Image (cartoon, rainbow, N blue to C red; front, side):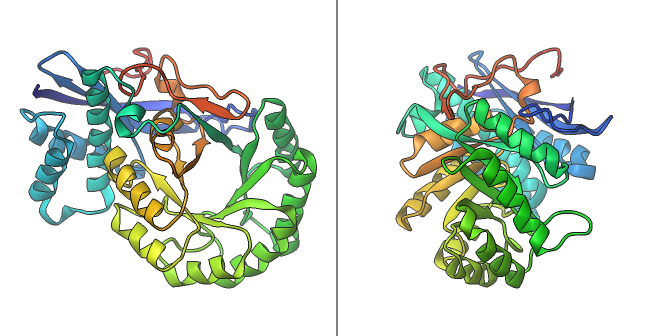
Length: 360
């Protein structure tokens, strides 16, 4: 089997919050790039890329350029494709746009591989289980009014979610008591049995993370995420050592090597893997295996329609972030039931673009 064509398309979808009807900014959109790889046997693989921001056109061009290098190669030899990309890109990696582009192609190649063997990608990766826990994300954002967040948290529980994530490091005129009060009210709204995570998005310094982190421990947080600068491994290790609450992190770093540094420094208790920054599904599996050697669980970041396969595949997969930002691109997506996601019982990723939204 040979790759015959790699196509990309710009996609814009409304930036809505569908889990609990969060307040939307009129006219705000999410800019994505859809990828489709064709082969001489008629099998096609698809994926999604983003994080390009103002240079999204450059990301698309990078995917096109790497895709041209892959034409004529066997799509099942994924490591060989990665090697060719690294050799050709020279000093353009290992992070940034190069990794985003190669990750997008990697994911589509795994889709092809699953279809070629007639198996879901999760089974090819290890097939540890067919269902995984999932947590609601994006419905309890720091920018949303507290009154809405409390009601939204209650709504998520009624929808069957057993895990959910909010955010601290509030915008505007905030202080530690306001931050702690937010967690207190959410915990009171959802009760003691729901796992509550909290994302800081690198907005605290080490002292703030330790101080506020200790104050919210009484509300039994499942984890605190990206509490300070992602590559401050020593600072993160200080926070992780000071708190009883587990510290999660990893979504902001590129490739596999930073995860080794984090684990060796004991910077995180829960590595969080973003497929688009970690060299795709191939990178995820390497990081998950590394984490297993350190006796650590792993969790996913974004694109749950794809990450359900990765987290379900490995024995140390903890939970899938259910943030449905990309769902408008597909005809059908995995839907949680009682806080669990089921791996699609279809070859490959089990996804198909909606031609009304994604137009090549």
